[in-house]
Structures are given as C-alpha cells and as structure tokens.
Length: 187
Image 1 (cartoon, rainbow, N blue to C red):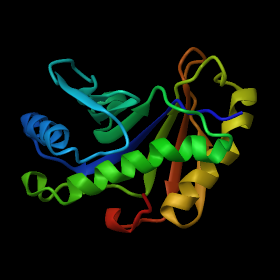
Image 2: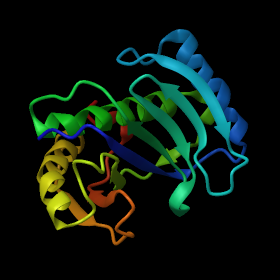
Image 3: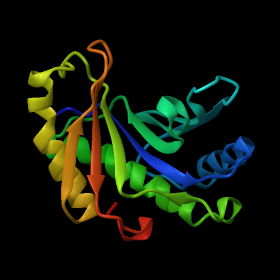
Image 4: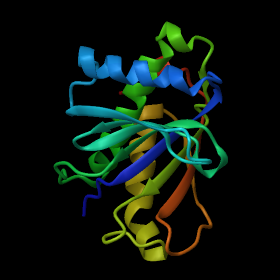
C-alpha cells in the first residue's frame, strides 16, 4: 500500500521575526512558477492564530506552510492528494522532495538571509488516518518506507521514533539525521 498523505516539517533554527516577509515570497513563487510540479493557487495568512499554521501557500495537491504549531517554527509541506505510486517509498518521497525544494528556494532568497534550517530533525505526520491508524499497525505500514525515503534525500543514517501523541491524532514520527546543508539534500 502506498500512502501519499504525509506532512513533513523541517525546523527553523533562525527565522525572520516579521511574519509578513513570507507572504510576498510565496506570492512570488506563484507569479514566477518557482514550483512546477503542482498548481500553486493562493497564499493565506493565519499568523493571527496563536500556535497556528502561520502562512500557507495553498496548492492543488498540498500546502507549503511556515508552521508555528506544536511548539516549533518550521517549513512544512502537507500533501493531501495526488497520484499514488505503486512504491510505498516513493509515496513518502514525493512530499519530502517538495519540502526540500522549497527549503532550497528559501535558503537562496535574500529577503530571508540569515535564516537557518535544523537539518538534523524532521517531524513527519501521516495524514491518511483511514489507511494508517495511530497504533502499532499503522507504524508497521509507514516505518520502513519513511526511513528509506528520508535516507535517500539526506544520504545517511536515519533514526525514527514514533511520537507519543493522543490516539485520535495523526501518527507522528520524529526523525533524526546527520546534519547536512540544505543545498546538499537531494530533491
């Protein structure tokens, strides 16, 4: 079974204090078609919601988010729909590669110079709760494909730990990897 509804979040070590900087960056991505493997639709600002999603770039298949939820600011990609590949590793890898491409775009944008990602950690949430429950059975479905997908992008050893979250929440995984420069990650 190939699961595609993943959320990947790459933490930010340093980020601009002004959340308004993200809005023109995301609008520029739409205008210049900086991301060509999805239809970029609109930008939404939820920065007024305490601990909420922040700023979203809404796309046909998913959302790019400057995410402030769960106590950590980071760049996230939430894949909601799309063609499910036959390979479970590829199902996980699509969203992860999209996150890395967006991180590379931000890393080279002068408007957020000094911004730094923590490439040693990654939060993964499995959004497809119909196919993947937040229990040992769900963990058994996604653990190995996730590990392989992350290892292919990071190019090294990956350690996965299933997070202890309420059973009604999406299955959540914390991955740790060897530090890499964003530019060295495989997208």
